[in-house]
View 1 (cartoon, helix red, strand yellow):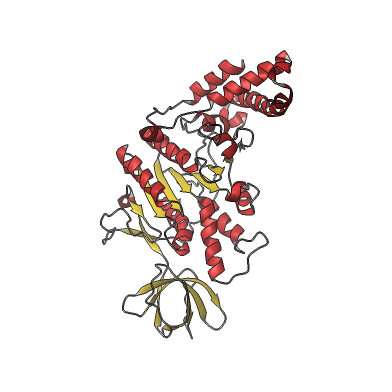
View 2: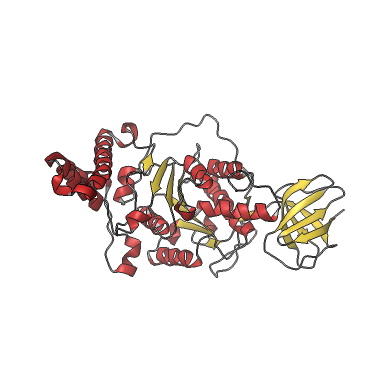
Length: 434
């Protein structure tokens, strides 16, 4: 026996099922002649299903029938999705025909892959990004996670686009891009850049930009992850997964929590924030079939890096690149705060003794530079000891050395971008500090 709509409040539809209640994350359809799809969020005693109106369809009224589909959100996966832009439900956003047919493979986005058994991470493989500050301070290691943290307008998206551009050119696996609640213009620019550089043939794109409702924005990272899992598990591919912006994922979940009348946690976020982030991050992992290497931008609200959501996502990362407004105002690009940027992968076992020892020396010089700046502001640089003056000059050269023009900005600035190999980066640093 079908259910019946009891109440409709914004995007939340409560449906009563006397028997045969649906499962959580199941799609149910409204019997209104349009088969409006709802996603079951949670169940309450008495056969009440709290459902979410995925497409913001206003043709839903009290008293309408509700039919189970016994299926979750299923999106097309596989080779046919490469070069396409899809939304959270697998519908195309690029103006091209829908992906459908008898031979199309579909995947339930909420179905977790089987747990890996007896899997050990192989020897760390470093991927060159061509961006000096990343290759030196936060080595890009296959199967690991890098977080790019910063407030609005400090260059997170540009840095991500440069990474996609540089790594895709090297042909290192298949790239995925999940646009979560960001500006439509940025998504369009990324698509056009990849198209102009003939890189779409190695890229799958999923978008739920800020014009979409919070349901689709909260689902887009999950849908993109499910599609990436298919390539990893069924085709044994190594995936490069880019998410811009992971904070918007939490923000969308927070909006849903508000309209569902859930009590927020102490930090003001949705009550299940930690488990939601943890489950998603655990899916962006490697197994015996292949690897998922992820780069995730993290917006910092009001430039407050101590925000609980930012802190929690940060704990899931192996490396953290901090973009600073103070650095950006000095005209330094990328605007990386070299003293706050850290990586647990910067070890002799992964990068080698030469790189590791150089990183220790560079960090020491940069820390000294920060402490000397305050003294210089009071007494002037000429009053420093010769040794301190020499170290201060070296640190300034290092900061200048890590400044780099981006290839993806060439058409906007007219300045040719730079690609620096890791060996070239290490040599340039040795020339300064030795």
